Length: 109
Length: 167
Image (cartoon, rainbow over all chains, first blue to last red):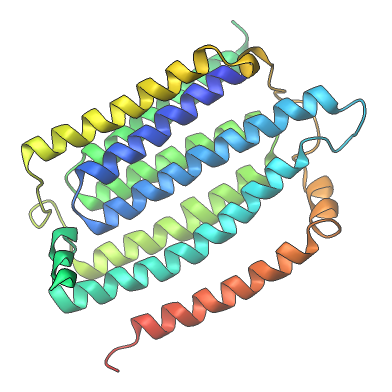
């Protein structure tokens, strides 16, 4: 399997996430689309790590393992991000009784 | 067509279709369920590339913990298709066009890339196993690992402080 298939798949998933962020107004759905983009990047990192492993396995048996460790750290950061982000959304819902991001323009005034 | 190619296409169609359903469906609960299907497809890709640890962690952390948290918050707020805010038709169209343009640009940039014919190792290779990952994580990457524990602690404190009622 060539890397280009994985690149195209990840680009497509990432762009679906972008389109979701731009087209929806529900804050929770926007947040979920961000998770989708993070996962697209994770998939690409793992694919590249396996590509480098195939190229460099003769010189170094652990070639390409950094990619998978980065994915692990991205998952750690994503979990922390979700806990804080959902707390912010719950607080926003408590104050405005809506999850519509357009309500947040009152921060301007 | 080998079995791994068939599996690749099956998982890719599953991931893309359910990702589209995430942004199409009106009901937020359905969106969460479709996103879980997407994560299962991505985990299938990991397992196909023999990144077994990441495949399982993806299932446990994303599909198990994070999505349950989303579902919990949505049910707490009692959101459904009726309360879903609707965006202006033209703004929605502009968002889809913008996403499509990004897709077009990135795929076009890939066309002349040298890397695109390099093969990805499927099924075989043991860097994705927990033994190799663990030994590298706890020797070369032990400082970032400890720093991430501080990040978790601050996220925990932050979530409690933000979510506290009244102040």
